Length: 164
View 1 (cartoon, rainbow, N blue to C red):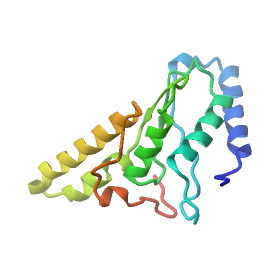
View 2 (cartoon, rainbow, N blue to C red):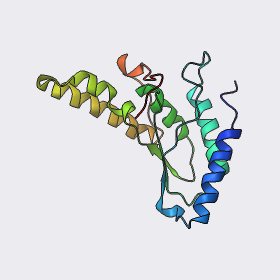
View 3 (cartoon, one colour):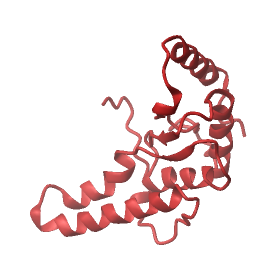
View 4 (tube, one colour):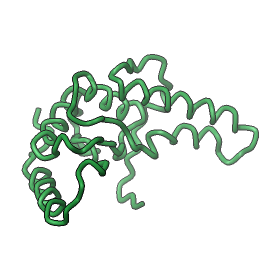
């Protein structure tokens, strides 16, 4: 399955690399925060975590020097579980950089829904956040299994026209 053509992202990363060199950016001092290469949110065909890992890492290996210490992925509207499974798949083999996460929604979504702004829900929300943090901690080590996840954490978070 073709997830997406890599021509556009390759050009973008090449230009970023060129501009970084021209401006004497110290690659050893940066963390890159890209999105994963996934099908569009409204695509009928979904990609497996292994396909997402393959496309994403292939793209990054072509353009990101090993001197960059870390790639910290954004979740980009994926469900909490989908983002974690994809991160886990990328960590099944050694990478030239530390591959981890910089999620907001995919780390906090269930937690915020459980809390709902009500003081009596704080403990339950904290427990939900701890579950997500542990899951992503395991995923950055390539040891996440996805077992025992709630149905809520499997729901996608894509919002058409979402702006930060």
